[in-house]
Length: 125
Image 1 (cartoon, rainbow, N blue to C red):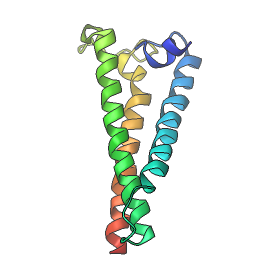
Image 2: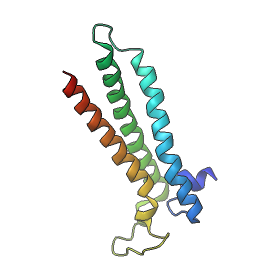
Image 3: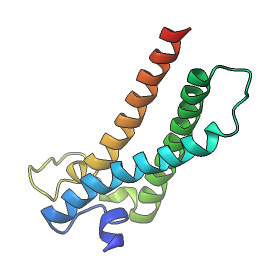
C-alpha cells in the first residue's frame, strides 16, 4: 500500500490517486510544522518573537523544499525517466503527468507558503 502511494508513478485506481492527493501535501504540512517547532527553539532571543517564528517557518519551508526535491530525485531514480512519453497526453489515469500532480501541487504550495510568509516579514519590518 505504501509503495502504491509513494513510489509507483502510475496509480492503480482513482482511490489510490486521491489518497496520494491527500497524503503527500498533509505529510509535507506536518513535517514543516514539526521542523518549525524544532527550529523556533534555536532562534536568537534578541529578535522579537514575531520575527523569530516567521524566520523559523521560512527555514523549515526551505528544508521542506529540499526534502521534496530529494523525493522527486528518488522517485525518478527508482522508476526511471523512460516512463515519460512526452508526445502522448491521454486524459485518463494512465497519464503520468496526472499521476505526478499531487507532488507538483505540494511543491507549488510550499513555494507559495514561503512567498506569503516572506511578504509578512517584510510588512512587519
